[in-house]
Length: 259
Length: 145
Image 1 (cartoon, each protein chain N blue to C red):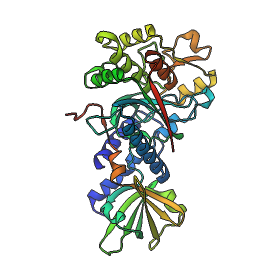
Image 2 (tube, rainbow over the protein chains, first blue to last red; image 1 turned 135 degrees about the vertical axis):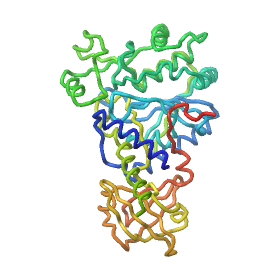
Image 3 (cartoon, each protein chain N blue to C red; image 1 turned 180 degrees about the vertical axis):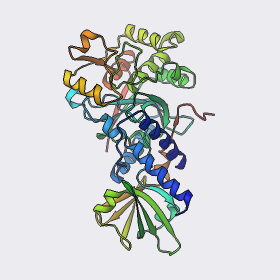
Image 4 (cartoon, each protein chain N blue to C red; image 1 turned 60 degrees about the vertical axis):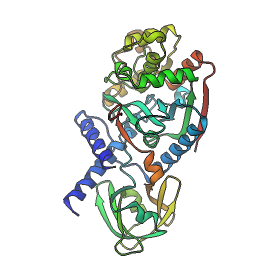
């Protein structure tokens, strides 16, 4: 636990230097309790599934304005070297413009100040699971990772990346035939030909201006001008990733968990 | 409190700040891929003593309350005078429940840990063995065998 604390200390220090907007309110007892309850429920559901790997999503914020429920997606792997059913994902560092790839327990995954205690599990077919597991043990997760973070990264640019973009490009690296994807450009090219469709958001000028001014982790300058200035923001969402997975593998199965 | 223990407390508090960092940074209509590097150290973190003291008790007595910024360290005594455990939790929760020296704290065992109540107020949740097994964080690939 102390190691985890020291680790978090390092993250906090980095965030402060970068001018991130960080709350100083500790998590409440109730949020820790609920997060762990959902983590255990998810762990048990994953164990009961008989599967080896799933994509997992949480409700980090209220996205109902955009007709979206889940905000963030990750990979959860049964035989993860750091512990059964551990998560692999990209995390933004405390509101800054940078990120890193992490291995985490499900308890951590559901204790990031969620808006609701719901979880989505998406199980691709066995072949897709196997290829993703194999890729996790290679350099591919790092090859398709970029530390420049924007919460609304444009999916067809390599200037920024967010958590869902990394996951999507990781799927491309793992699933493209013949190991043909080794970097972000190749991943995006494969995603285009695979028919991936990002989600269109309508974001007003005032909201764009406010976000850019007050948040270190939101940028719009990777979006094409004609889209950006007309308030049409295309980005990678959980829904759009799930759509791609189902298109590639119609047998993919979903399960929703709620406290 | 020894220097080492004080340092642990401070580190825990700072961890609490990092843990909740994303609260501000993602609650908005643009928070599409919210994810922060979080730690659970801010609530229910045992600063000193053993969780066994909590696990073995239906009721604990508050021996002291030490303010530490947005958090407090509550020192709890079990049935035995020698059995003491200190837990970091939210100052607001403890304040709302009017926790003071001599206050009785009820322990409710749950599947993932121990809920500490004063009256009907939950003042801390201490992860047990099952809960702690679900909590870890490291850079991807670090220490893989």
